[in-house]
Image (cartoon, rainbow, N blue to C red; front, side, top):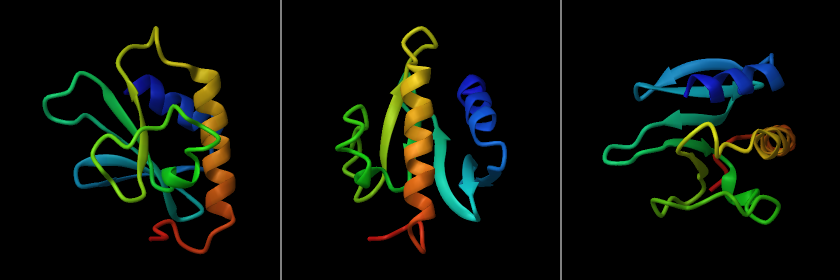
Length: 107
């Protein structure tokens, strides 16, 4: 989780970390971009993107694991399988999408 957090801050130094529901949310231009969560009964870190549904075509790695309406996520089980290059592209795509909308929660 700390490694993913470090990558987020390295790529998006202007991002603001806020805790909501006891988990870290990362805000870009005062709008929630993504959050990190460890779901009970799982063996991975859920890196969830608030507008993930709009990024699914470009990033098929995003999953709708819990039948969420808008949020899509990648699941990081180990640092060895973490694709940092894809994650950086995903962060950049998500910030670009967020910049083009008025609110983060569209649906």
